[in-house]
Amino acid sequence: MGKITRLVVLSSELPSELHLLIYELHADVTIKETCYGMLIYGEEAMVTALVNTIRKIDPGAFIKERGFIPGDPRRCRADRGGGARPGFYSIQKEYEVLPALTRALAKLPYDTPPAPVGKPEKISVARLREIIDA
Image 1: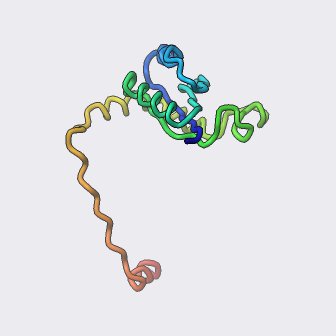
Image 2: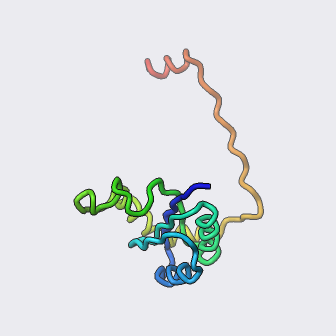
Image 3: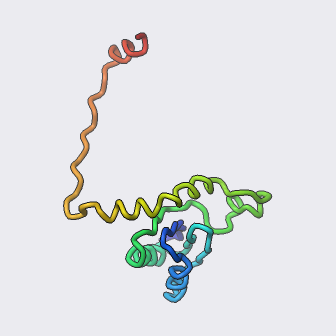
């Protein structure tokens, strides 16, 4: 297995407490604290286990894959001359709505899977030309 990075966005009231809990687990990973949560980098099995633990501790934590390791010169602000990192403004806006998303997700009925959504029928080339010419 290779190494992976996960971006963890925390919506809890005291995210520093979750950081401390993660450090106390003594996982063999690199953790970089950020203004919105943390980056976790390490062996895939270890990072996955840690992410699952975070989800159990704080269901309001949102986790996604990140393609770069912490400090990667292609993303690091120090190497790019400062300023907000690419994507920061999106995360900043998303961070504001995380408490509402957490409450909404908690109300979902997880006992029944959602109904499958069917694919719409394809339109013919002739119909597409009619739409374009209209």
